[in-house]
Image (spheres, rainbow, N blue to C red):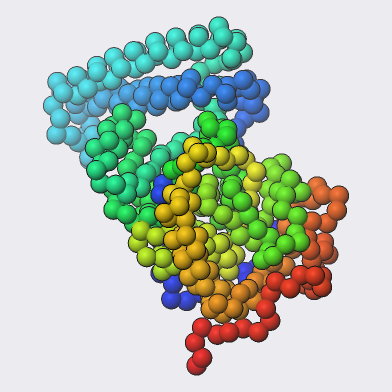
Length: 425
């Protein structure tokens, strides 16, 4: 079901999207439903990503050159026997001469033959390793679960430009460096999002490792976005169901009855990893660059974006798809180092949280207010009405009634009920 938008508007905010690094793990392709036999025949393959990646590239190479071969053969015939109809003449008009067309056709045919040999050899090797059934065909292997993707990097250090350019070349354009100079989180994410071509964005930080590390979680993430057109953002790091304690923050309390995926609609989600529907991100203006100066961290911007999505009529969720760890546990991340920690988690957090509370809370420096309590209840209702509950005890501090806005238990005093306007007018 689709819930109605919250009765609050946002005016005058112009912004767009980054952090230190953003990876866009999706492609421009239409995601077709996999046929049932694909699941059975390729059940052993998800752990063998190198073979699938090679096959994907070989299939693409073969298809492109087969297209050229067939088209050039038809063009040669038209050149030798020119069409009479003016529409046909226009369709086959070319500045190429016959020898060039013939050479292009022969070259494409040669590449097809060479590629076919590589495909046959690789499929034979997969059969011998018993990674695919003996009856599996090349057409079956086109069912693979890979999500076409590109990897965008915000390069804050100009002296690293050549290194990233070399990496882009060696990965055939999979890695796309975007040269910046210390724009850091908000402006970096926004800049990368404007360059990315995929339907979905996955924001990553440069000092994080994820398990599983082979991106095998991507198909399930894409499946959920495709199943829920109103889903704008999916957190995979952490999430909140309210301001203050009392809710059980366990995504395994719910699942989508249509996809079977564990998920929970979230009041707010945290960077990073963080997945976003690119069209929704563009529609709400991206991350608010007004929350920090260039070069500063983007703390509280993820929570602010979460609220803005809800207000715009979109949904925000959390999915337990990955586990996250530090690239080097002995080396704290950039915003946690001794020399930078207070700058981000002290100074910037104080000012950014004030911006957040002035916009969505009870006023500048005044904490969360009535509207955020209303949103907490709204998110609770979306969970109860859209998802299938797997809990044994109600996980919400406002209870599990399917309508109304129950008062908070007496021990929770998280929301102020007297707003302090941004400007007295």
